[in-house]
Image (cartoon, rainbow, N blue to C red; front, side, top):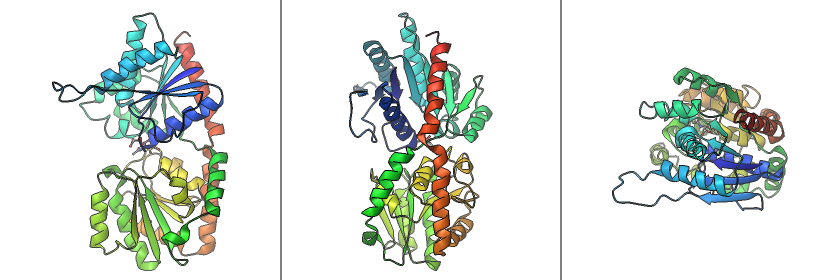
Length: 381
Ligand code: GMT
């Protein structure tokens, strides 16, 4: 099949899921065409089955806002025609589902039918999409997709609650390539640079995100402050975003700058996770929490909030613990509980990997293949 994938090319989870899915599908012999404004970060190299089509938005002084949706939908029309794309899979509703719908309609006028699968990822529903400025367009493009998927049960419920959706939403969780990740984790463990980060008797706590408000990164620093009072430890903050400044200010205020390492945006997630003892994800809302799953597959237990889809990923008492949003004290106590006892930490590490195994790509890919068949059938292909 020739499949067109539209996604954000950045470090965000929706782009990572879209890229990894495309790579897996390409291994099965499908031709995968990524259509976005930059080569996706996890798409390290192109291969005979992987193609990348860059969307250009020419600057024009009349436009206060450059019309990306317009450029994207035109690019989609051209790529679909030139490469005989059979199906379009758009990730993150805004503006991808809307641009996809426009492309679909333009092609329909030329007698070309193209089915569209839309995957809802999170803030396209819970934060941004729900804004009255966007809501009608988001509702319309979800209702006019051939098949709609969401990455957790919780996100499906949120979508039905917040929007007037007439469509069935199928839940297909985020995934990891277990074999590949286990191999990488094993290799990384062998050359682990732990000693360059922390002393033997120090614990390493990690947080990875794009440092937006929704991630509550100040809580990460606050939790660490409490843990640091009881246990010798270091905090690794990985990623860039608007909240990084506030995290730095807080680190200074608490006099913790020596123990908190700001690592910037990194593609070396496995290298960082291999030396981590605990992962913190105290988000305000999180539709799934791919970052938590990536930690778990590296045998890193997770302290998270119990919001959104996180309880579907992080199992309380097995892969880590869940607390109420903003309950820094509780999260700190749970972090200390896991870290203070060697054997307990070992058990949680094992538990984290065990739960992560549920989300192996081999279990998830057949769902997407089934969905593609259904979308093609619905579209009369
Ligand atoms: O919705 C977002 O914040 C953006 C998106 C992204 O591109 O990072 O993240 C969401 O999609 C991920 C992949 O499906 C999920 O694992 C994240 O939980 C989700 N983020 C939120 O819901 C905040």
